Amino acid sequence: MVTRLAPSPAPAPAPTTYPYTGQGQDRRRRRRRGARARARLWRTEVTVCALGLVALTTALTAWPAPAPARPMPAGVSLVRSGLVMASPFDAPVADRTLMDDYAFNGSARPGVGYGAATAGGLHIGVRPHGGWAGWFAVTIHAAGAQMVWHTTMARPTAPVGGAVGEAVFAVQTASTQHSGAINYAVVAALSSRGKSTWQVGSAHGLVADADTHVLWESPLRADTPATEAVTVRTDGLRRLTVWLGSREVYTSDRLHLDAPSPFQAYLEVQGRGIGYVATFRNFWVADAAPVTVEGAPRGAHLALSVGATTVSAVADAQGIATLAVPPYAAVGTGTLRVTHGSRTQHFVDLHYAGGDILQLSSP
Image (tube, rainbow, N blue to C red):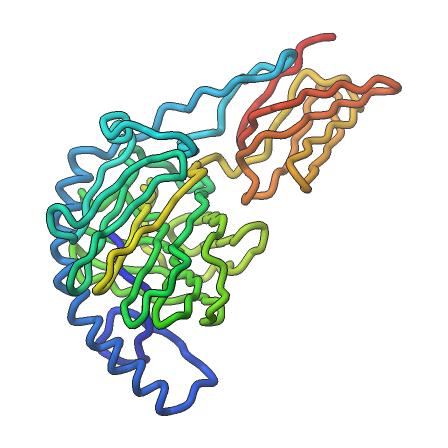
């Protein structure tokens, strides 16, 4: 279970430390009062959800997930897959199929929280209600510390007035069922009063009352992007790096995350006094290692092109080349080009993932 990222003074008895700087004293006082009120509401919600989560993860957590199948172009075979989980959410998925990989829960009352996978994405929402309410989809399978976590996340574009809405993507320790810890790294899109911000944070809690700390935030603006491709890499201990699109917005190796691997992903929505929905597409988890190609001619030049990004390498004496794709592009479809002398081979529609070992067939 994750909690909302929202402003709170330092020090103050609220679950979030929110370092507003350069603001007027009056504005800070208003934010403090609002944060304290939200804190009282959070505690009830976190307790309910965390207790349910302990039972849920005890029954459902599995490690590791079966590697999703991928077609390979002629001349390339997949020796080892680095892809751990993948849900494109680009076509309707029946609830019974969706529940093979995800469990649904939250603080919302029965009939308020919902999830549906359509051609437009996985929609996690709460219907109109009073007070705070949240709902989430959590991966049943877990993955380790050497992984990259990714999804494209969107919030509604319509203003929410005086209400509050939030779309959330969190990577949380799967040890909850053993320790009761609800520690996680989180990326959230928070909207209120016609403005929105993207935030990165970390949280610590034991069964309930998780304290969430904002580590980075974008300016609170009316024109903040509603959709971002979010990529997270963490060891659960001291290291956390987050990308929005191809832009690295936060990195640190000096944190105290206390979130031992393996991890589960949470795709979540939160709302106060409003119906709200978060939409997720292109969710995947993959090894952070390079793509390795074997069987190339010695000295051959290999290049993998993915959109505007191209990574290249030269095959060594054993015919092995390692292609270091950036974490935010660790899974994708591209073209592999192998050039040796005057001959160039093109392998199009290559569905690759970080950590893959690919074998080229002899020409």
